[in-house]
Image (cartoon, rainbow, N blue to C red):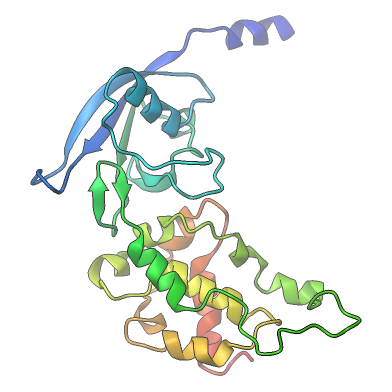
Amino acid sequence: MAQVSDVADNQPPQTKTLRIARFNPEKDNEKQFVEFSVPVEKWTTVLETILDVKQHHDHSVAVRYSCRQATCGSCGMIINGKPRLACFTKVSELDSDVVTVEPMNNFPIIRDLAVKFERLFDTHHKIKPYLDREDTELESDAKEFLQSPEELEKYIQFANCIKCGLCNSACPTMATDSSFVGPQALAQAYRYVADSRDKGKDSRLKIIDDSHGIWRCHFAGSCSQVCPKGVDPAMGIQLLRGYMLGFRS
């Protein structure tokens, strides 16, 4: 069996077609797709194929990336029609001979695959993404604000958000309402409202109690389907509405 495995591992790489959306808003009227043949191993990620194109074919392809391990959230894009992280998506998992990459929806395009994140960062900042309390001084015999496992469980999954923007890209409401705060910010609002250490619940609820805030969400659920970290923004928004309607305290 070991010999069979060794033979399989030594097979030459396959060749796949990578279709990259090219668009420069400063001079182009519409995006165009350019195709490249790229070598692919069973472990090759979509990001690696893009970087192969930059190295061997066209260095001008614009793409944002950093950590390459699904932690920084920089390389979000549309891959074969679905918002994904390029560094986290293996070509072999796509089960296709053609890989099409496009910039994320609902974000202004800088160039090619790189988009602007100002709206996401502005809405994230708007909901006060930090513990809000006046008594910041700890008691003399304390080292931290303690929580029970049950209190931690209420919000811990939402603390895994890496601000990649995939949920906002998948959200149909983001496409029709340029003022909608978005699933990423709403999920983070719940993360802090549900945190027993936080005392800013009332002020946060006032911020999102708006026609372009929590009440604008139609619960399509597409945001939760694309999160690479397993965060469920749709559930967070539902739970947040419970606070708004007085069902939770």
